[in-house]
Length: 208
Image (tube, rainbow, N blue to C red; front, side, top):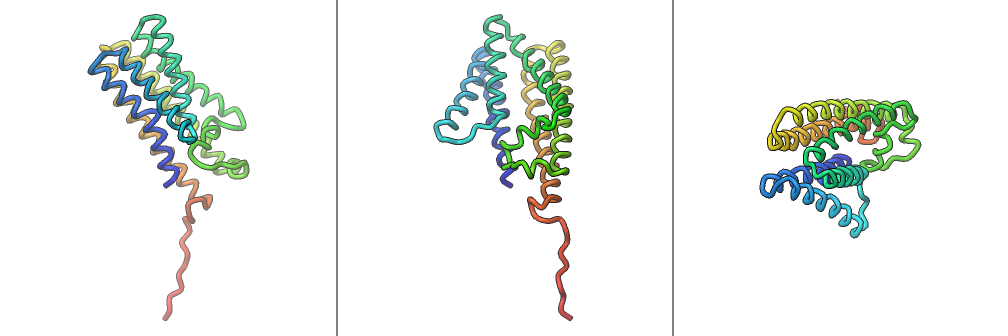
């Protein structure tokens, strides 16, 4: 239950709320106001967690870094189109980094797992846990590449209004489904490892 709450909160703060904020401001005030509003929310969330001495998730920090870079380039070039192209490129780069990390001792998911569950070296080195990290790294890499491909096609073939609407909805749905798949696979492995209770049936003596 704790893992589910942490994953849900991380996705809500780093993905869902910025996406909803962006689309709301985009529909009401235009693209540049929406860009600034999403930035304000992201850095506001980081500042609030720092002031309340709460740990900031790696996902939120990564979101802030990527958003800062794409906003700066878009403002310098005065191009909203470039703002939307950059996350497509970054999705492809991040997905590629996930795939390349499979060649190392610690796949990318293993490096982020501590944000969601207390993870010591002994636990992280268990065979089932290591397989889980590799499988989840592959899952997120494939989803990232598929999302980047789909978004690039939409950006080139649709109007900006249609692109923003479809992107906001589809990206949120993809991330939610991927998160549920991640939690489900993690919970299955956790039960097998005895971290969430045993899956074995315990015989109960019955009096004659």
